[in-house]
Length: 293
Image 1 (tube, rainbow, N blue to C red):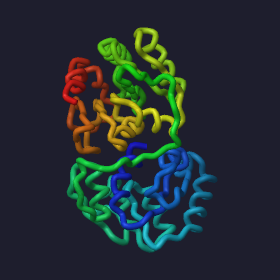
Image 2 (cartoon, rainbow, N blue to C red; image 1 turned 135 degrees about the horizontal axis):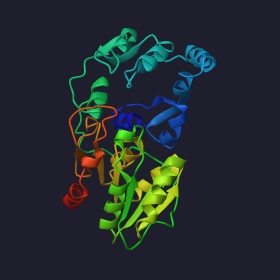
Image 3 (cartoon, rainbow, N blue to C red; image 1 turned 180 degrees about the horizontal axis):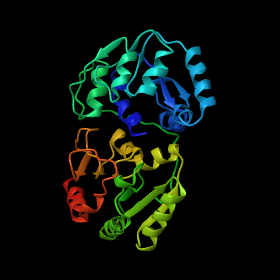
């Protein structure tokens, strides 16, 4: 999801609306977006495990046709399937997976560090990336758990890798240091719920809530601050110019440029999946970052 959200940085700079091909599991993140012509859902994640579905997606892409497709993901699967639907596939000369470049008709060499810069390079757009308009949209909703008298702070405690997750005890300590504020923890699955309940039981100011993607966008966009692991939902705040602090352990910030809304805390400057170092992040460091806003 994070890659999808970061790629939206290009949309306000395009002269026309584009179709956006996205995995079905994440299509809701793009709903209501005025910059997108059509959302085209595919099931490539699931197709990796199901041979019949792989064949169905192959046929699906063969039945599509676009004059031009931009492959922002730079992976073998995205390049291969996109090549079935166009004769003009544009991608990176140095994509994330080298084999992907074999499918491109036009190759742009990326020289930039941050992901959002590389996306702009692919479209050959130059712009100030420290300022951007709202990038995510949603059907509005009111939330009773939002406080009218205290600051509303969202914790994003999940992560696709265990090594991306701040330990539960750190979240508890952080919430207790923010005892005068209203802390909200949205969860998406049972594992996140168990952790959220544990944090709630050991604090006095934490509310937990199960949300779909639309309502998650709405909640975060109404918050005063988000503190989260390096995971897709955390970047909703960056996309909509909500103050945020992203925590990096076995990964680092090669995704977004820090600005007046976004700050990061890193343990290291590399990506080492499985390296359990999030416990090295001191709660005092997070509190200092909050004070910087």
